[in-house]
Image (cartoon, rainbow, N blue to C red; front, side, top):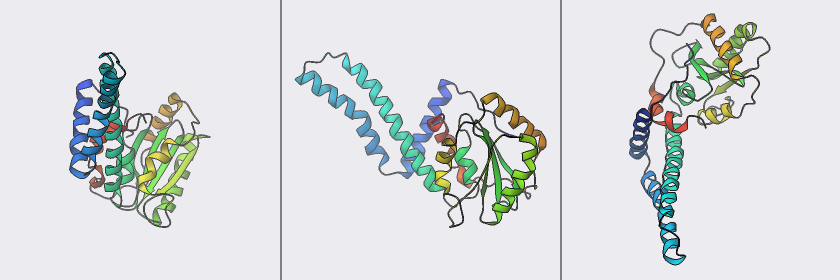
Length: 231
């Protein structure tokens, strides 16, 4: 079933930010110095202005907010880079990287040839997006799934992409989020929700072989979700 967007409390938001900090710190040697620089620089600038330009001490309040914003931006960028790097070559990576994007309802494994060759579906204001991963054989499966759902979505645009690291793929898995967000807005959110419900009722195409969808690409997904949601 397509996942609805979950409401986050302030406490859960802080928890996911903490997860992102821990996850990124363990895998990115540049994270700590860049984060420290982003947080300290606003205070250094304000201190210089207070000393040499006689600025009011109240400017430190502004420096605090700028430092927090800069710290979140650096965390966002470094977490994204680490997660994208670790996702390369992992089964289920395409789904792991788009799950939780605001405005999109994502359903994993709507059709599959094996546990590593499958098609995921995302429904949003662009329409319906089918993402295949697992090699050239999945391209035919993408076409079959597009044909299967076209009678349900009517004139709503259906985009199909094969993602991976081979020469026959449309783009790398590391680009999947950026490509999804750049698609044009063709329908409103109400229509997108209606289409997602109709597709859920339609069910899946080729059944996924026994066993769970691989989750090896999900490391850090929860940690980055709060940081990247809404971009």
